[in-house]
Amino acid sequence: MKQLTTKNLIAFLSLAVLCNLVLCSLAPAQETKPDTVLLNGKFFTGVASQPYVQAVAIRGERIMATGDTKTIQALAGPNTVAIDLHGSTAIPGINDAHHHFSLGPAEVDVDFQTLDPSWEQVKNGIVAAIAKNPPNSLIAVTIGFQVFGDTSVDRDALDKIAPNNPVTLGTFTGHAMILNSAALRFYNVSETQPDPLGGRLERDAKGRLTGTIREYALMNMSRAAADRIPDSEAIVQLRQQLEDEAKYGVTSIQELSVAMPPARAVSLLKAVPTQIRVRIVRMPGTTPAGRDVAEGKRMPAHPASLITVSGSKWLADGVGVEGTLTPRGAWKLPAKPPFDSLMADLPLQFPEAEYRTMLQETIDNNDQLLLHISGNRSAQTVLDAIDATGGKSIWDGRRLCFEHGDGIFPDQFARIKQDGIIVVQNPIHLAPIVPPGVVAFEKAQPLKSLLEAGIPLAFGSDAPVNPYLDIMFATNPGNRPSEAITREQAVIAYTRTSAYAEFAEKEKGTLEPGKFADIAVLSQDIFTVPAPDLPKTLSVLTMVGGKVVYKAPDPK
Image (cartoon, rainbow, N blue to C red; front, side):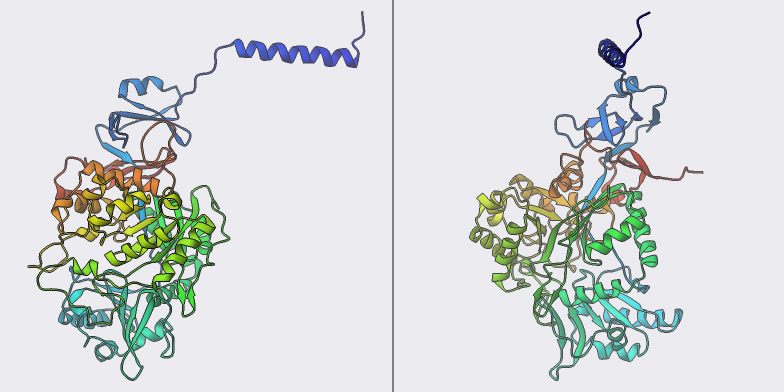
């Protein structure tokens, strides 16, 4: 027998491998089966060509197929998990495009069931809270037009009713606060502390702090307080907030990170760990010397599978309730229209040249820019700065975001569209919160007209977190009924366009093959229930990348 040499052995094995490959290529391919199928549902896909389907098949993290129940069921294999929705409505996971984590010290919240309590209510509420809680508890009250517009309500007035407890009166917009002396000490605010750029610590004629703190001064103070929260406690606070998001069917949030620098946010979210997608947007503070442009710039874009760091946000103006940054008390709510003046006449947060600087930084860093735009003047200033930095040829495609956009007027629509700007609105702003007898806005707070102009419209919560409350106000805007949009349009703003706002529309935002299987199965049909019932909506099943991250308890 001829002995097999090493050379012949190698040739033989090579021939065997080649034959095996040929035979494998001729054999029928193993059919890929879905891991999970969701059947017998009413899925709103967000896709114009097929807005509703009955079933969805999922393989790994992504949607494999959509269609009728019979077709999708036929794809299932012996190991496929089948979930019968029994007719429940499902939507792409909500993407909150304007989110703020709450991170801070423990406080006693005084609730008046109104955003605009009277000073008498506030006084009585503070006294009752002090009596019912441990000594030196931090007492927090939310106020509106009445109390903030009353300049007699200051540090000294609060000291008379609360000499020992730290007390804060925060406007419902979150852009200003009145503190008593104990609260100033609690938050380490000194009498000699200088104003940061874009912020103010108000003082009396003698230079003594009145207790009123605005804008970036308040943001800096809140950040410093959050920085003092131990990581162990911060993790508990964030975990609870993320769990609440999942219960509403929120699968993505775009966190405008005022409470934490990006590095800490990433560290805490990894430790929780987050089960929903979180985009961290840098939202630094300011100093007397200028804006902090360095914060978070060295962070990796994708520090974890569910965490992204991108974009920077600045406040281009304040809000109408406080008339920021005009002196407190000079801004008066008009008894009659035009109510649009609250939006048209807002002062700018920074000197005009600073907006051009922001835009140039964005170009140089190839970084998305998000700007708080509540008023008309800030919108006009930024549009002019866009023209000065290259106009449409530079900006179309960069997806600059106007956060809120309450003060955008129709004569600006064409420029906003040509520059590729996205408007990220918070429908809670369209709630009928103006005092009785005041005529609604006539030009401000657009929704429907933005869509008709071809401007991308995304939604975010700002606060509180309840996307279905926002959908109610978007489809029934108390301030401006003519701007109502359909419920389908509202869901698209909260899903597909929110994904577009973070350059993620190829990965999520609709229910179609190839996209992430981010899905919310809802407790009721949000497309047909009476409008007042929309805020009662919860998720019964929330999936992120095909994984169940929340399932409602079975009813007993």
